[in-house]
Image (cartoon, rainbow, N blue to C red; front, side, top):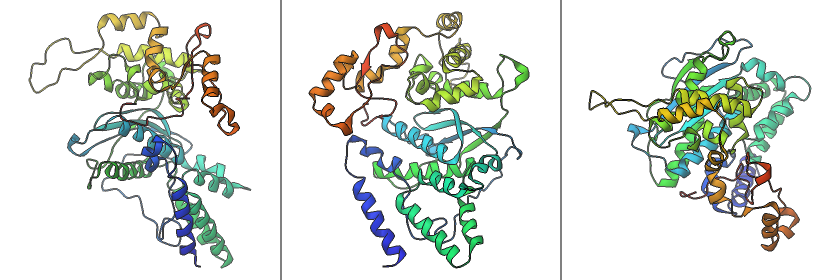
Length: 406
């Protein structure tokens, strides 16, 4: 049995083992790791280059992280994403950013386009973690988060063959091919859009291009220490992104839109979302960042006061002056009622809601609590006062949407 035949068998076993389970199957194409196929990058064949038809403006190299606003729209804006599609795209954004070493500061997935505000570390500095003794194993461990067991098996086999034949240069060239995809927004966006297109087309039984042209990118100046509490270009860009749902009239409070960086952070669905905004604000904690960022959002959420002079111009939605003043006077602090509204998923998808004792009892009554392999820690719904702690059976920071109505 040759290498290709062996890998086909491994691939087949992996696919069959991943098809069991629950309603999460809708996201299998998004969450699945890249499997082995003949001619894949770095394994016995040529590598596909990440080319471009027009020159991108990139930050200068050398010990500095650079920030970019990335945006892409569906063909003609006609393809519309529903809840499941938005959730899938958010999952894939997180997956690709982790693999590529790109930090997402904030984002927003709308019905026919998405925005990303990212910080890309200097590649040479970031890759030093894979140098020296044990560096190659660290790199392979990083790749294994993205590639399947069959892929990694084939890669290790190929590296071993290269070295057995005295081809250390060839082995390093293979590894360098993977390194080139790290800390690269072009590589990240290319694969992000291709993977989502395949998943979307399969889900909806369609063919053809999903996205309109290539993605757009804008190099954004990072935080400026000389401006103190004033807004800089990076923060203004973040506000523009997180206020998209307000301008579109989808929600009255930016915290209520689930598929944005701010909405995800307030809703407690992602630690990464909170870390991104905390870094953007330059705060020491999420609590401090949440209050400052909310003041900035409301200060810039003004609606058009008059009817547009031209019928071709759309009226921009916003937040009423009274509400804006209220939020700013409170320093961005959210009331318990507002926090509860932001946790609406817990009250619709939580399975069991109540005191810790009640939730634990229901878990035991269902029989699942008697299975040691299914033990889970019960956590209170984030940010609600300890005196009125409410618990949920499902951990919604991890569990995703499984139906369009989720």
